[in-house]
Length: 219
Image 1 (cartoon, one colour):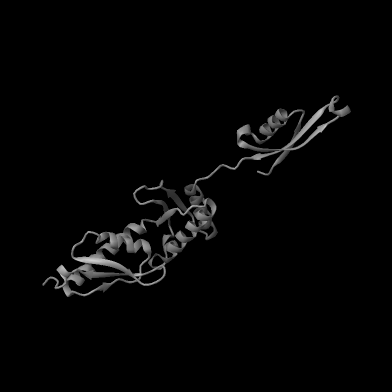
Image 2 (cartoon, rainbow, N blue to C red; image 1 turned 90 degrees about the vertical axis):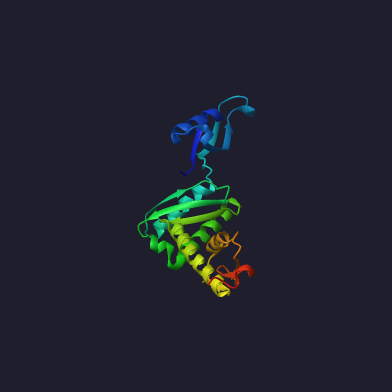
């Protein structure tokens, strides 16, 4: 709501009038004194009038609330309707998760999750600009991340078996940081293969290499 301007014989009276008009408590108002008129000789006689402007105080939103609202606004702009749920910051992963349920989820996901990654990048930048903090976030649409994780796990295990069997390095297709992390974590304590990222830019390949113990592979 825009600011309103009210007058009273005292500051307290003006505030009470503003509270009644805005149907809000004083603590929920931003108040600015615009003018104090005093009539009479040297201000000793006559009446006094206080004029103030008042508006509803904007409620401080959390990055989670802001991100949720921004995603819903972007959805409406694109002509899509969806529900967004957020989880609190996960201390283990250091991420805030935004869960989207949408009938047209494929549109938001895009080929190989490219649109989803772009949406996540926009949201991360928007939150960083508003709150001056580099919050780690993850957007999931219709459970795509879990399905993708399962598919990557199956693919990575198959490539690792091939690397051990042939004694040669095997490379994946270019993957985003989140997807690469899934593979690196999968083989973090594996004694038969090692992994590393290769390439430049946002998407890179993961190189799966047999260790010396498994270089001759399985027959």
